[in-house]
Structures are given as structure tokens and as C-alpha cells.
Length: 329
Image (tube, one colour):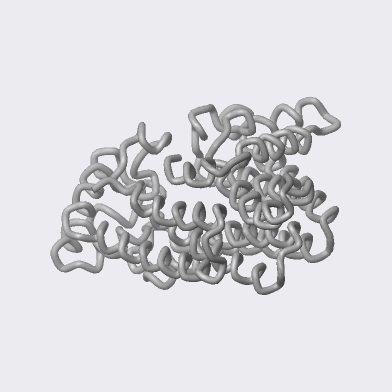
């Protein structure tokens, strides 16, 4: 992910993420060999690792001041948020009936839905176990975040194929589905590093707004990018009846609503997906959605202003800008 390069360019961050990777591999080991195989299935496939990178980047602010590596509590907090993310992916793939994830066969496709659900639960349990070892505040925070993820996903499911889905409903859903975990990633990084309470609150706000940018951009890419660029089928949100911000904007436009509306509201085949994507790209809905993302990006960067010009803060600013710049012109 090009947008993540700004974080990875930080000195020693890749080494610290390697510590997170080692913690992840240890955390997914179970007493039963089959559970270990299933729970660890996506770990070698990598992924963006954006959430643990955020936790480590924020945690580095304390480490940089002290002139040493980040505390092991920061590493374990980063591991916990990635385990929550992985567990949510297992569950998402069951709901979406996904065949692949990160260019490998999905757990549900390989071993069935029941195994995928139980393995996802196992990952969430492991995350909760780690969070409990980091103190009551982190444990409570992670539990609340898992609840927010579930609420955001249920909101999305309840609005599937709904041509009347509002922009407000969409934003509330992605705030829970994506914003909450990125906010928690930053907050856990700040808490485990021992930053001030003001800093904890500021980085939480940054993460929440960054999550909104990330999800809106991801939803735009589902409309404008290719299968190869996404690493998954383009237009899948349309197939699943998840009408995101560019779709909502296109449905509200007099220029495209009449041609787009008859294609949606039900499960659609590849030809209809291609036509719907073409219509959505034709009328300014994509730039309009991108402007909303840029608004959240400006808010995220504004939150960082009191922290000056530290390398970690500059990297977070660059990450925010790079996300919106990742949308093809």
C-alpha cells in the first residue's frame, strides 16, 4: 500500500513491526494444531498492517524522546488491534461469501463457514487476552471497539440493497466499521507509551478521522480501480448491495439516478456491475465523494498541529495526504 510508505520510511519502524509480526505468530498458536493452522492462515499473507503501524508510530513519540525502541506494551497493543482486524476479516468473508482474501483462498472457502466463524472468534479472544494484560483501560477500550465494529457491520447489513440509504447512515456505519478500530489503534499506542491524557485524546481523534478517510477512499476504489489493483473483485460492494458514498451521490444526481436506479436494489451480474460502475464514474460522484474524504483528512491533520515537526507526526500527516492521493485521476 503506497499510502503506508510514509510510516515505513520512519527509521527502525520496520524492525518494530517485525516485533509485532512475531507477537502475532505467537498469539495465533492454539493447543489444537488444526486451530493453529486456521487461525494463522492470513498472517503469512501479510496485508497492510496499517493499524499496528499506527499504534507503533504513535508509541514511538515516547520512545524517540527517550532515545530507545518502543516499549513491549506498545508492540503487544499493536498485536491486539491487528488480531481484532484479522478476526473481523474472517467474519466478513463468511458474510460476503468471499473466495479469496489477500490473494490466497479465504478461510471460509478452504474450511467452511463454521470453522471460519470459530477461528475469527478465537482471534478476538486472543486480542482480548492481550488487552487484559495491558490494563483495565486498554481491555475496556478493545471490548468497546469490538462492539462498535459489530454495530457498524449490522448497520451495513440492515441497509443492504437499500436505494434510499442516506449519506448520514453511511457515515455512521463506517465510523463504527472502520473509524473505531483506527481510533483505537492510535489510542492504544498512546496509552501503552504513557503519553499525556491530552495526547491520548488527540491521537484518538486523529485515528477516527483517518479511518473515515481510509474507508471512503476504499469505497471509491471499489468503483474506479481494477481487480488487480484491489487484489479482490472490483465492484463487489455493488454485488453485495452495499451502497457507498459515490453510489449514494450518483443516486442523488438527476443526471444518473434514472439510469443507475434500475440496475441496483438486488443482486446483480457482472455485466450490470460494469455498467453501474461506468455510470457512477460519469457524473462527478467520485470527485464529490473524494472531497468528503479530503474534509476528514484536513480535520485529521489539524488535530496533529500542536505536536510540531517530529518525524512521527510528519509521517502521520503524509499518510493522511497519501490516502486521498491514491485515488486514480
